[in-house]
Amino acid sequence: MRIEIRENQVLLDGYVNAVERESRVLPSPRGRFKEKIRAKTFERALDKAENVDLLFNHDKNRKLGSLKEGNLQLYEDNIGLRAIAHVSDTEIIQKAKDGKLKGWSFGFIDNKPSWEDGEGGIQQRTLEDIELLEVSILDKTPAYIATSIEARGEEQAISETRGTDFKAEIEDLSEEETRSNKNIDYSLFEKQIELLKLKGGN
Image 1 (spheres, rainbow, N blue to C red):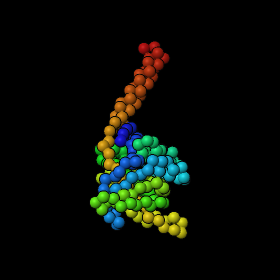
Image 2: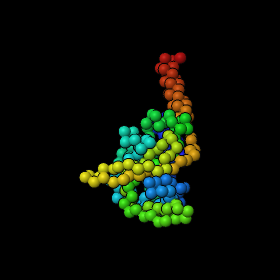
Image 3: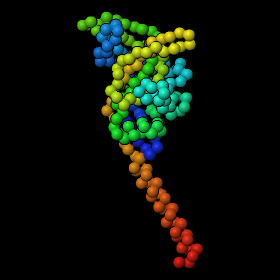
């Protein structure tokens, strides 16, 4: 995960979730299980999605952007779902500077549940057809699984969240930008002084 801090925005670039890799053991009402997301699952979800929001801690009242707004890019490569976001929210910028951003998470609906029995009573779940609702940046240890009721017109569906913690590589360019701006202003000031001297003959 790369975090690039500028004076009035932060760039977040990293993987929300990997494909074709088993998760750690997760809890659920059905019992403990491991999960694998098939390759192209995120790609198909993005192809049919009208929009995907970027939230803070899955809070719909803390929307940071979206695909439609243009400050969020999402795509699947050979590793998994990658997110690139430009965020101008002052709280997020400060948390980035303080090293408090802890991970990514995504909310989805599983349209084609696939469960199999595994060793030691641990079930195996495979995700192949999902509806991607949102991705979130977190300032707390990701809750690897959570569920909620999602309204879909007159129907309701169970939406789920998955999280990925990360070690951030932080590059703070905000002070460098400030110094650069000051140098530019000072240079312009010097030129104005020179012009005044020429006009005054001194």
